Amino acid sequence: MHPAFWKGLTALLILYVLGQHLGVRDRALQYHNKQRLTEQKPSHYHAHNTRPAKNSTWTYHWKEHRNNHALTDEQCDAAFPDLYFEIDRAASYWATRELNTQSLELYEGNEAGVRAHLEEGQLRIVQTRGMWREDFRQRIIAVLHQIYRALVAVESSEPFQDTEFTFVVDDFPLFPSNDSSQSAVFSFARNVKIESHEAVWLMPDFNFWAAVPSAGAFAEMQARARSHDARIEDKEQRLVWRGVEWTNPELRGALLNASVGRPWADVKSMTWGDTTKFLSLDEHCRYAFVVNTEGRSWSSRLTHLLNCDSVPVIHDMEWTAHYYHLLDAGVNYVPVRRDFSDLEKQIEYHLAHPQTSQRISDAARTTFRERYTSPAAEACYWRKLLRTWSGIAPRPERTPSIVFEEFL
Image (spheres, rainbow, N blue to C red):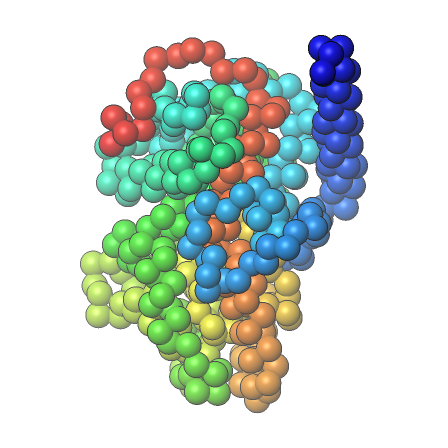
């Protein structure tokens, strides 16, 4: 055909694609604006319908797809439509603020973290802090492995835009107090009562790769948790907790006081120097009720407890992680006050009403273990996070770095 025909056809196709892109972006901005007006800062969050899945004949089946790290973007949206609330919240926050290369500085107040670079699909390491400490080193390696796995799983079909980002792996991020510029970091958790934490981009924590030595590889931990599956009435009819008190003595001390001597409680404080009271994370799943407590910040234990098919008991929380907006009081967990003053009342009620307890347990299992804390969901979240971030982050400068494979 005549060359003019092909030029005209190409122009029409370009206009169509631009129209589709702008339409999606407009809808996203409308959503972000709405979320900024409606986002609540109480301790408990409720699921938000962040983005309806596109029409697709593909359907998520947890037994088949839970460990699939290579779901397409469309499959991710179909399988996990409510997963990306925290990404959208952070993008909305930064949409009206300046994000520059200074925002990516690895502030020295943070004991451990990494400044990383995606360049032509390669994960590169620009700067590290805290690698000398074994626990921090394990966390850093775990996060980098998550990112690398999420990237290479789709590298042949869904390339990534070059970008640079910074993440911290301590229990909470710190920001310079005497600097007018704002830092933009990826972190495991943010405090919903601290204004500066609104700048934080939440990422999956290190447990989604492996929790060494307490739980091991995440997929294997989920399998061990499933080995304790049983109806609530057939589980040990007690509330279980193990932990150190010093990380949050006021809160954890309140739990110990509220449960001491109670027949429904197997609640014990422990130290890592004395393992006589130790209970593996999957062994918690033998109990009908599992309780979560914040520590220095969020408690990574909750991710493991939600992989049981037990009844989660959760106090009013000040910290949130990347999936906590999916926690729904009375639906997929039993809420208690932060001082645990109503703990006995709640446990006695749910012991006397096993059908209610079973409904909550089923909802927690299907929401989290079978879907939103699956390895597939973790990979989808990382890719959405990096794509959203790269769309608003400053263009990366060429800086000295080494590839991830060499870094290891």
